[in-house]
Image (cartoon, rainbow, N blue to C red; front, side, top):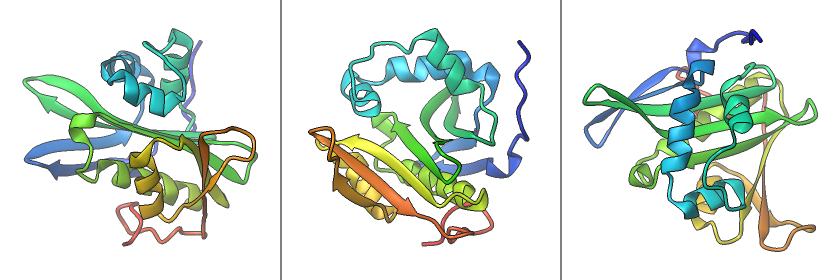
Length: 191
């Protein structure tokens, strides 16, 4: 099956320096299947549990395929990667999927060794900007009440956090967007 990318969003490509490392942020491509599978399997089990809200040792092949075959209309996904000793390594990923034409559900995962460096904020900011530019009204997500890192990220990004009325121990995250979502030229929300 040939997979069609709606329009590869090269404008989302970014290069940043974090702790002396060059980090490339770019949209996911279909050939990233192995990088994606390796990233998630290398995460500590607690980090995978926080991301998927269930125990998951390895991503099923069908999910890896869904995570890498992105149309960039209904599903936007970014990776942050480093190149050390000739090896490409994903250190973070973030994505949103449009749910009903007006809102997108997001998720972010960062290798614990790269947390606290602003990478998750930068990735989420790029997603929020893209969602606003796409005419979406809201970005939403869910996290475990025990996931203090995600709660901090969401608050910092301006999300409203409330308890799920349906699922004990789950928090709902919601951010209402404006047309340009306060984005700068680099596709990152202005501070």
